[in-house]
Length: 151
Image (cartoon, rainbow, N blue to C red; front, top):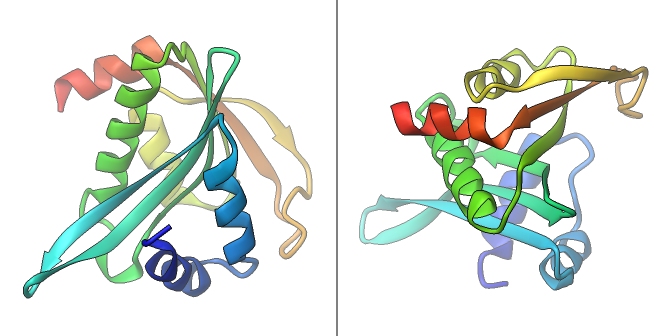
């Protein structure tokens, strides 16, 4: 809860249809929901660099949102968030990971491919604001953990 103002600033500067504070608060109250933040040291204070929100349900990890502050992108923060999310989820018994990504989001697709994600379905015109297709990606947690072990 104490991180929400920083998270909302990142969210609002990144997405054309950002989640509201109410959505984040509800996520924090759902028993199957999990959230992680990445922090960096700046001057004498720690600032949020990025965050991930996901569910663990019926042995699956379902990624809902992963975001890194714009000035810190391509610095490995998204990979660190993914790695920690995978480790935590595996400890909770997740065997499969599922997420969706916009067809044109090349950076995110490259990140997910490193973890062994593969396209399993396409949802045409999924994103209302752009009409872009969503690619549904899945990965076996064992493959993800193999990648993590090589880091």
